[in-house]
Length: 315
Image 1 (spheres, rainbow, N blue to C red):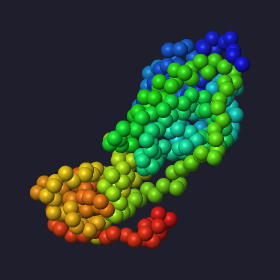
Image 2 (image 1 turned 90 degrees about the horizontal axis):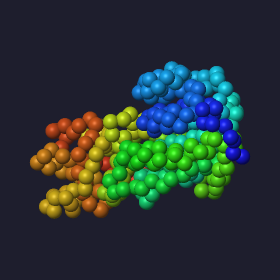
Image 3 (image 1 turned 30 degrees about the vertical axis):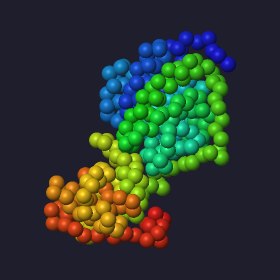
Image 4 (image 1 turned 120 degrees about the horizontal axis):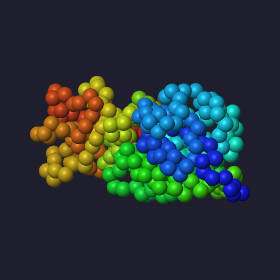
């Protein structure tokens, strides 16, 4: 059912963070909607909202503050907190969420990381209605997002933000409707990932894996300069754990490590550590803490058995 109300008579409360939340706020105000309140997830977005004259709550304030003023819609844009039932029920028309992955395939957190870990060929974003489930509401607007060779979690996330901002243009007319029609999700295709199921201590590297597989895991945990709440793949050498930040395929045709067994290491003249994997050799170009000079002579890392890796994964 389409309303005849002008945009400025439609009241919207906005919760979220990051560049896409700022762009959504800008478009709402440009289009003439009334943004009644903003609940920011970070200081930068809070400053932007206040600069635009929007009543802005404290960063991370209680979600029930969204219920202080009547509104027609709540938009959840790059928000990781689950909205309680009283907040979902508060707006006259409903709640709409931006999700940085294709639904129902990648419900929950860290969708770009999960897609890269899966070796997916393509990704996507969705604007969907919110119910009491996690990313289960009807889909309103979706858009595909390409996955490119060498993508990191940050690179794919930024592409999702751009796609989400573009797709928001198609969502704006739906905000004028009292009951926009969405497309129901197929529950049989749903996968869900939550923060409680993610090991924040890191993932031990299986050196029997291919170079491409190990690079994919490293890239999937690369958030660039932004906070990494997920962790990094790690390795143990000389009784010390190192987080693996960046790796490259070894391109030295005379690398003495090429014919060694998985886990064998060799330090090149540039000080970077070469590690033999299941099919070839890779180069560790960044780790934390950095490799010490005394730890870069030839030696072998432990190679776990399948049973040991299964036990680590279960832990």
